[in-house]
Length: 88
Length: 134
Image (cartoon, rainbow over all chains, first blue to last red; front, side, top):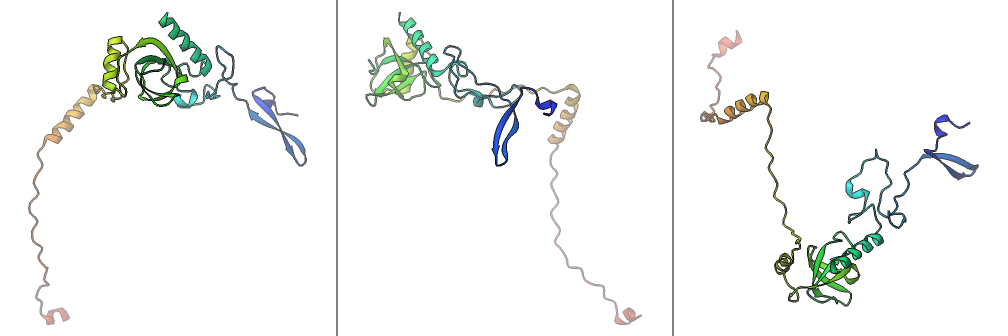
């Protein structure tokens, strides 16, 4: 029987191969990766932290405009459209 | 297209979305930029050119670029550090008396120490030997 506290989905089951067979280990789950608001692709340079976990501001997202919100490709497209509107 | 004096917008990096001017061309791919951006070389693919141009010499200084940008109405990158603002220190009323006392104590003049006396060797008293034996 599994301990009651380990039965929730906040604990992930991990299968570990040992000489005596496959054993199950338990590990706390992490939040999922952040995704781009435009393209939907997973973002790079964004830390997967719980709200209670502390980290400096620079360590949580890339240091560029729309960092942590848009991917680099989406950001470039956005600025290109801005420039073309300025010219027109 | 990417010649000296061409006004561009930076698309990539920390300075993305800011206006800059091409100051010099290094390679067919790299270019020296300045303006509302750090003065450094940049890849052409990270720039989006505009129709505007500015009359500048090759290798123009930051001050000349700043003049041209002010005429266009764009802001300019400044590397001078900001002056620290001195905040007024708040003191509670019941602590003001203590601080005044500290101020008075500090105003007292320091007393000068007297000159040190020369050390004299202590001599034993002349006691006759007959009395010591007793």
